[in-house]
Image 1 (cartoon, rainbow, N blue to C red):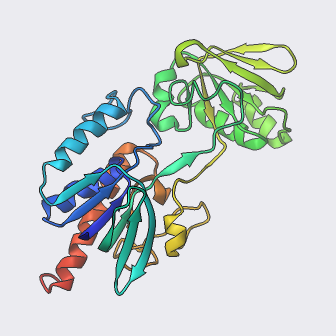
Image 2: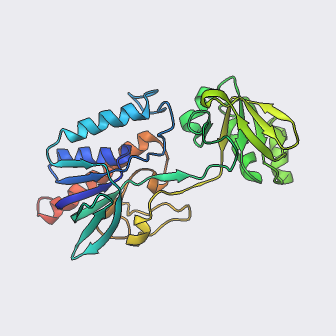
Image 3: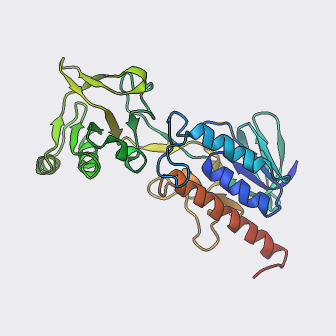
Length: 301
């Protein structure tokens, strides 16, 4: 298979890029193993025109729109390898698909490093969150826990106060600096240092945190600050440079990574981690790729 562009990842960024490239009449292969970061969430928030829509419905509609373009092929598979080859890129997929692409767009996303707390998996994306801009608004008038070890939880708790008045900081058995404790007091935020035993809540709705000390804390949601990592090692394999946060660096003029012909969009760039931004980054990356083809063909400067 020979294509103009292989788009790796079929979340909002990848699908947005494929749509623009398809409308630019480029031959595109989009590969997606459907492991989107927000798949557990019941609703998307902060996306104009689709606020409170389910991620599953959003993605299904987007796939149908993209698939309507005859030069775009969507394939449910994982890209396992990409290597530079004579000015292009050889690729291989888990389903046996192989080929050559002139350009690569990585929209491979991130994976959240969930706190190691019993019961968290059933709550993640529903009442346990990583993004205040996505989910903070929904907790107005409720009690929310800011989770993070050391000063991380305290810093997060202070930020949450803008969205929610009733905030409790949980450091899960770790010490918090005097400076951070002072800030918590200034903002009337309770600090619980006890080690957490488990999280409890029916149907994905957090209701109570149990501490190893035997005490408990009633609450409606938890936001955590434990970091995230790249969901794919393809950028590392290709040699793309990273910034101090682990995001893939791009050239502001060409939108390329440090590897010519390789582009990135969405959460993998570690810029602003919102669906709305991912959609925009995908479109921006696609325009940059199409302009590179136009320059190659002598159709623009």
